[in-house]
Length: 181
Image 1 (cartoon, rainbow, N blue to C red):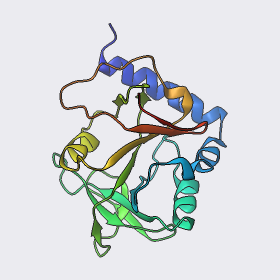
Image 2 (tube, rainbow, N blue to C red):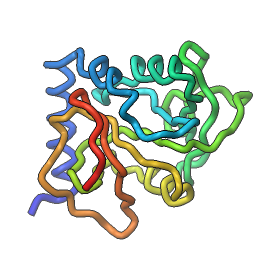
Image 3 (cartoon, one colour):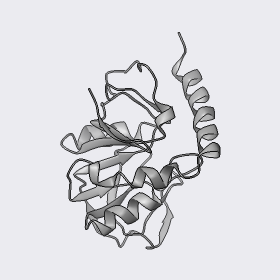
């Protein structure tokens, strides 16, 4: 059986290849924004490395008059907070080195959280980077709808989940939105 470490390494390589061969995937995924579950305040993320870029999706959701926010890591071993944000507003690096809204931005609670991932399955399983930021955050916001944002090619047959892993409600890819089984 493949270890989580080995699976993460292979899925990082796969995601990198997917990002290199399909630079229109994020735009196509954003075209399915209306299929996302309802939620007035939507948390996105700022893509790093080969993560599926959220820029086009941010614009689509902003135009649909959904309020946007981004996660902010204040403490590395705690749940993230979310600050209000709109496309074009300035960002700074948070405690984890990720682009985040400035401290003067309003802290909000999202109804819908879009999360990056390395792999997902049809049953809501999600393999993240391994830092636990999203799992800790999902645990303190259990009512938020959890949606992966990924390349369709990142889907695997079945992920082995641990007790602390919270399932996604669905995944948005360049092929559309699909609710978890």
